[in-house]
Length: 532
Image (cartoon, rainbow, N blue to C red; front, side, top):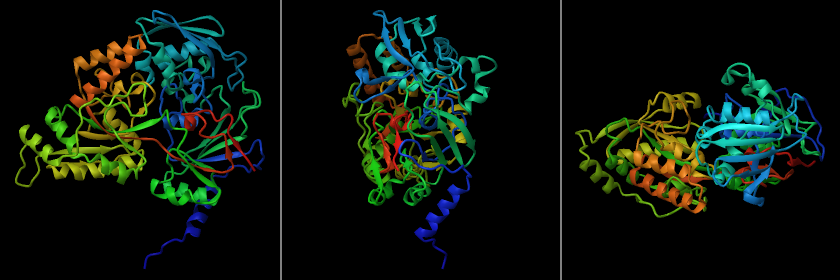
């Protein structure tokens, strides 16, 4: 009989793993102490000004600050950080930011408007995965004094977009560290220097990231924690065991498997939290390579959509922690969402009829054609959906071969080499379609940009609609254009939106001031406290 480890053995093993990282001991205090957090990945680049993604923000947002952060109750849903205020001109050609005074970089240099201008013009606009679309028309940043930055645009740019984008695309980095040499090669991309509540201290690959309290933080009396340790635990079962053993105090981003939530939520001293992700809605998307002849046919794409049982996906893969998607804007984005879009009910018979009509009958072996299917490796759910989609396609005569890669190989295959037919992606809706959604279908995106249209899809009328919305200042008209955008995407299916979901956190009862912003998991945690 094979050896089956007991729960005690598993917990002991996790404790030994955590101890092996050789972190220095630190005693607990009501104010202070060390918070240990599960981390299931290690981003190669920790500069959120270049890579605006949740995996980067999770660590780096405590070190590198944006101009503003999302807030449940603040005006416009924004809490000032490095900017204390902002206003746009009536013609949409300028946005003026008033910057916080008395802020220092972690190396002691003063934070000024020159840092904002450099970040915007040298990084956000040309290099950042999301900023290149938000700031596409940014022509210059004027700095009349050390605490004023005036963004000048070559075409009208809605203040609504800029406000919605600030938490995501406006991470500011120090000019004096980045101005010499190639920005992508700068060592600060892996050991970031910021103005945030915590200072980057150490990274042991495969073990942990260590952040320490910034004693000169501009918000006096904060942060409340002395240290944050992001413990690398790629195995989600390990994260659950470490929580139960008391070796970590937080597992965010559904680091605990969904199937374990019911049980672990009953463990004394632990609680399951679904708040703090409202501005981080993930979308389960089937990316399509339109260079493939079969997939360039709308009827084939419609057939694939009809082959997917969204209810099964929501209830079986996500265990009910998701919602069936209708299109590229999630239902909780009430400002922009419309349900008035073409729908594709689960209907395998209709899928078969469409494939026949498109000229792809079943061969003697029952297959119509074969495809390579690449599920993104970031979450269990994307991998599970890849297996489900393979089976669903087989039912209608499409033979899909699942190709599993690690994160780096997957991104290169899909977004640089275009070596895929179908791919499973989890893009994030970030409050405004222009920030991270239109880039999924807009043509002309350079190779290598993650979570963008790398499937070769080109629709001039859809591009024109996207471009018109990007320069429409009237809020009502802009919203109407994005509702038309949803209808057009659902009709032409450049990609297939399957589900949308948020995440869960499992936290110790000792942890206070958590989940108190709609982006809490990727915010600065200056007010987070660990009680004795």
